[in-house]
Amino acid sequence: MSAYKKSKMLTPDQISELHRLHWVEKWSLRKIARHLHIGRRTLAKYLNAPASKPARRERSHKIEPWKAAITELLEKDPEASAPVIAQHLKPLGYDGGLTIIKDYLRTLRKNSIARRAYVRVEPAAGERFDVDWGHFGALVYNGATRKLYAFCLVEAHSRKMYLEFTHSQTFETFARCHLHAFQFFGGVSREIWFDNLATAVAEHDGNLVRFNPRFLSFARECGFIPRACHVRAPWEKALNSYCTS
Image (cartoon, rainbow, N blue to C red; front, side, top):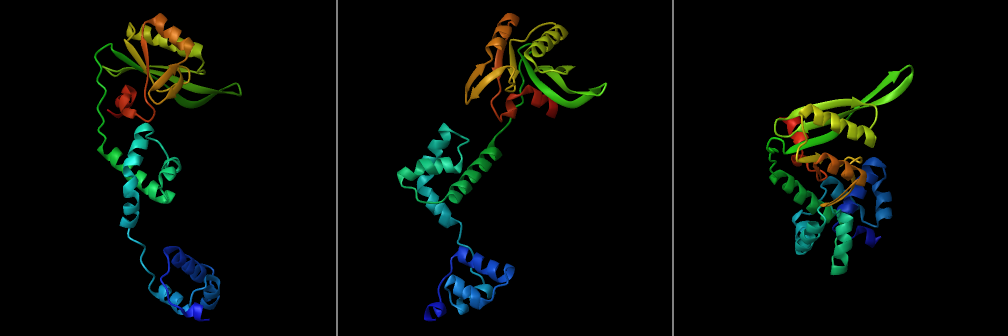
């Protein structure tokens, strides 16, 4: 019994478990004392005046020696997750948990977003078109349902838009819509930017872009340079500027 009566400091996890067992599970102090091997007087003390959680600076102090290594990893892969970073740090001697890394990454990324400035896209006249697909539900013809899409091309300087509704997103439809848009504008821009459309972009890995070979042939025939916007980079899109202006 002396072991139960011995007063000691409880960890935050123990305090949380104590409150759960007492207030949620409705266990008696005697039962909790036997279960946790902690004296009833100690348990009563923490029920009446639970200890505060450890200060966050403890975590902050623990992550401090690894900030430079984390920064280096994020330079290589800005989207690296906490488990991936922990996997790289452990061979170097890191013995902390994932929560510390998650908290630090959350702070870094929040500050990065807050500091980021967005510049309105303002190309010269005839320099750039932006292309994307829109989805508008479906239409029913004689009981048959067909999806409805909209091909959208914006002249990035004037923000003038060409819109064409279709029931298909095949390459043939995609190319035909381009030709109709070129006829509408009376010419082709020097560059056309795409928001990673599968019809145009075959692969996008960081700054490496591989276009669909068939689409590249179409671009060469029409005389424009295809460009692909980066993933999660709305400031690169004239279409986005048009919709928010």
